[in-house]
Amino acid sequence: MSYLAAGKVNTLQIQPLVTHKGETGRRTTITAFRKVLQTEKTAVSDDPDTAKVSQDQTSVNHSGVIFRDPATGKAVRYVETGSAEDKTSTASQAASKSGAAAKTTTASSMKTTKFDEYFKKAAQKYGVPESLLKGIAKAESNFNERDLSSSGAMGVMQLMPETARGLGVTDPYDPEQNIMGGAKCIAQKLKEFHGDVELALAAYNAGSGAVKRAGGIPSKCRTYIKRVLSYQAAFETAKKVG
Image (tube, rainbow, N blue to C red):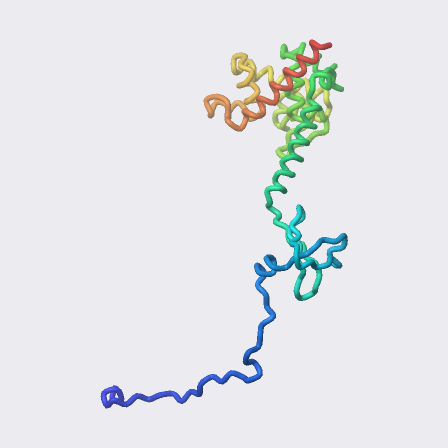
């Protein structure tokens, strides 16, 4: 403070920065990536590594933008992976798969199943439409007697272990026992919900408790119910066609 009051200020003796003479006027070889994409012009060859560079044409095709790497001289292709074309292609593939799946659920392909004998027997014993049982089996396992879901449901009608035991099913992978057990289960649900097929299917899928808590059909069961009823209708149509 005494120095400031007296008008004296200490200073640091720092020499100014001197630029090396050899660097003066030197030009950089670094090129902005965006500028490279805008200015490099190429023609595509079969071999990207030997593609020749053309100074009067930019190559932009379905595979992306191709330009010459200034460091290596090789042609490089940059692709936008989330392009509209990619999405369109994916959508087309999905539609194709969906169409193929739809063809396998025609009435003619559903006239018979490998377990018709068991479905008929179960329908007669428990008073449940045979077509409804087949619809459930189609939606649940696609008639795969060895099917096992991530939640532990087993067999053609996808019975949970505890449910299977309660229905008297000793071997859930035996198609006859499984179908008979599934028929008994849906018959119980139909009785519990006074013949309401949609509520009974919701209970078969998510449990009676879930239906009662929701005061109707739980939202997670709606798609399942539509599938089963759609398959049931297809089986009935196939039967009429003969």
